[in-house]
Length: 191
Image 1 (cartoon, rainbow, N blue to C red):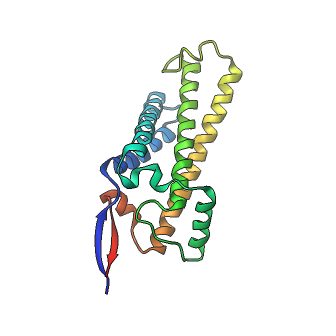
Image 2 (cartoon, rainbow, N blue to C red):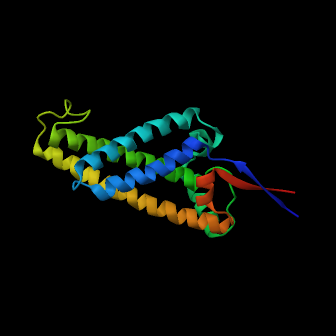
Image 3 (spheres, one colour):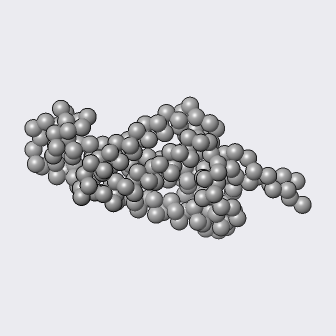
């Protein structure tokens, strides 16, 4: 007989980061250029969140640290193959595929934020990169605009894959990962 107990896994910062990032990305994505000040401030907030997560990934709690979940792409791929065969190992923290997705999302979001700041500097002569891009030509603006749009859409694509992964992982291991990201706890079965 197994007794179900729950342990804390996701600390308050990880949960705040996750849900704040969801909200800020949604605001920035929907606002686009139509409500520029909202788009810009949501982008700045995402940038601050990314910096804070980078720091917390080094000094944070056990399951928040990159050393706990960053693995090689081949390890993530093996995990995905095992998941398809319904024999994937259960992890208390992020599984190898989830860890790989986090790295991809952080890189894509960072590129989106930096390219957005460059566009804002070129078009509006404003923001922290304004001096760096003063007098830039139209071609540079177009390069950053294309990159910004690509990475914003690529991030959305990654989010959709992430959501699918959460659903599959929740079904395979019979646990609600969304609830775990809200209350910070995951079950541990003990004899």
